[in-house]
Image (tube, rainbow, N blue to C red; front, side, top):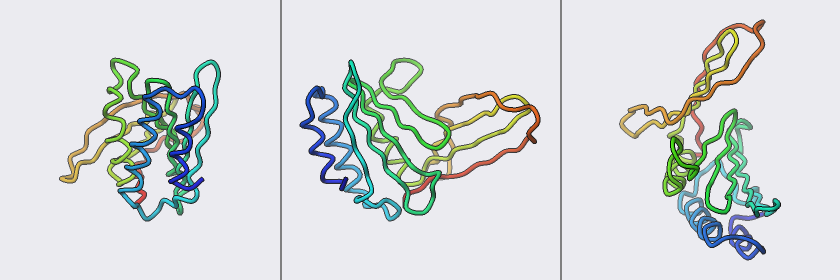
Length: 163
C-alpha cells in the first residue's frame, strides 16, 4: 500500500477521531522525511480488531530485515514495535504521553534510536536508547525476558536507521 493510501484507512468504519488524526500526521511525517531505506510502495496498512478497532501499519526496511517498524494505532494510544522490543504511548505512567509518539517515530526513522541487548545467564536485558545529535544517550526504557541458561553471555548494540 503506497504511503498516500494510508490516508484512505482513515475512512474505515469504527475509527476514532484520534486514530484518523494520527494516521494523517504519521503519513505527513513519513512523507516529509523522505528516508532512503524506506520504500513507500512497501508500506502496508490494515484496520481490524474487535471490540476495539485498531490500525496496523508496517514499515519494512529496504536493506536490514531487523529494522522494520510496526505502528499500532489504538483508539486513544499508540504502540511501536521494532525488532525485539516495543514502546507504548498514552497508557499512563510510566509510559510517555501519546503526544510524544510522532517524535519517537521521527527519531526511529532518522537513526537516533539504539537497541542494546545484554544477554545474561538467565535474562536478556533490552534497552531502547535515544541518541541526540550531540551524541548524548538517553535510555527511554528497559525490559527483561527469560532466556536459556546454556547460551553464552554477550552484549550487542545496534542503531536502527532508515536514512
